[in-house]
Image 1 (cartoon, rainbow, N blue to C red):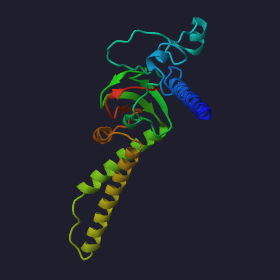
Image 2: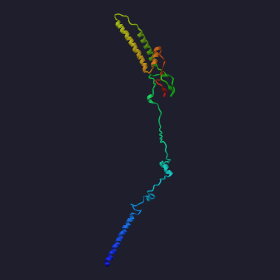
Image 3: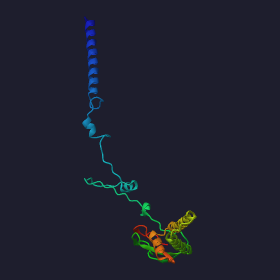
Image 4: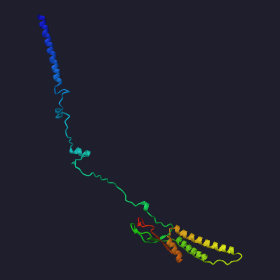
Length: 221
């Protein structure tokens, strides 16, 4: 009987010890400091996870280029500043350059920026070669007039040969006149100037170069 009582008491003590150990473990897991039972609100209120504003000293902000402004609604505009050159449209430039050696006797447009109209006189040019070419034009024009005004040859046994000789003379005179006109045209002498020389029969010391287009003078001789 005594042995049974002692054995039962030992069982009770062992059961109480196991129960106490189990209760202690459960309480530890449910405590606020455990991994599963931590309080998020409490942690947000303090510790390293708390959000705090960033403060920069004025010297540091200036060094790294930090600026401050009040946020507001406004149109977004971006200004781009760049250096550039204002020049002329090269596709619309017209070069007036005499193609013969000579001298400018008179300038009608003598400063940059002058407004000119098409056909307006620009300068009078003198050239010995140009005077010679005019004299040849006048001579060729006279020969052509004489050859074309010559009467038809009289009929004879050799009439066919005589008529052929007259026709050849007229062709040569016309070819000489066309050559004299073409030479002046190659030198950019206007057609109306060539016609005037033929009409008057007097070579001019100077010839006038005129503006081929309306515009603004960008360079003078």
